[in-house]
Amino acid sequence: MRIARITRITNETEIKAVLRIDGKGKFDIKIPIGFLKHMLESFAKHGLFDMKIEAKGDLEVDQHHLVEDLGFVLGQAFKKSLGNKKGINRAGYFIFPMDDALAIAAVDVSGRPYLKFISKFKRRFCGDLDTDLIEDFFYGFSVGLGCNIAIQAKYGRSDHHKIEAIFKAFAKAMKMACSKDKRAAKEMPSTKGLIEK
Image (cartoon, rainbow, N blue to C red; front, side, top):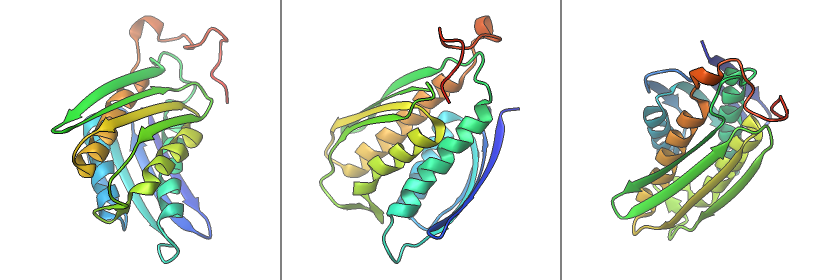
């Protein structure tokens, strides 16, 4: 059972998350940013991850602390759920079209955080989410899990479609990376014999 419970409380945010990697895409997400809630629900559904998240933060300052910390906590939940990582594919990728938009996401659960994010948005806000912080969400995730993430959404008329395509592509990439290969069930997916901490 690859399940994790993470609680993170700081002076800026309070986040509780439960993640089941081998789920059915069920979700119960209570956060004060509606568009990000929608994106996390899409992530759970398309990755077949069961997720329960409750979060609040200092939105009177701005959304940055909460958005980045949500990414970090979700990354930590994956890290804990994956355990020693034996038998996982480790890497995953997906290209997701959504109407006028196309997003490409790739991930390597290498133990080393790195993010390459290539996308620009026409508007500062999509719904109630500050689009400037989408990159920060994925940066937080990469640090929390210890993974290399590459994301591109180079075109699309609608910012909503571009962002949603990004989250859906990332969900599918994570599903592939976290899936187990029976041929390597007891093997560490690295020539080093370990995944860096």
